[in-house]
Image 1 (cartoon, rainbow, N blue to C red):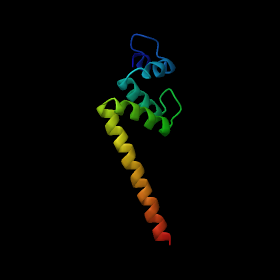
Image 2 (spheres, helix red, strand yellow; image 1 turned 180 degrees about the horizontal axis):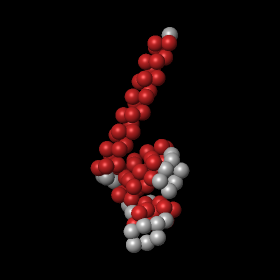
Image 3 (tube, rainbow, N blue to C red; image 1 turned 45 degrees about the vertical axis):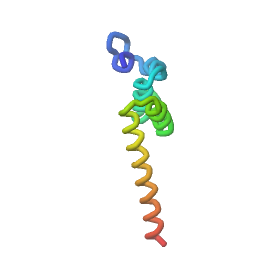
Length: 88
């Protein structure tokens, strides 16, 4: 997080990403980076990947965010089905 925010070091988002690969909290933070495109290209597949890795290690916020993403995707699928039914 120090590299991400420039706390005590020169701000370097690419260096921050390297350190985010080391533990559950950091992997959760990497998921956030991918979700919002902070220092990396925005990528929901990578977001889910890193939230899942972190969640599997018991990180509560990662579990919550992963659940929210899955719920959001489920609602999108339901709406696509409803729209197709209405069009028929």
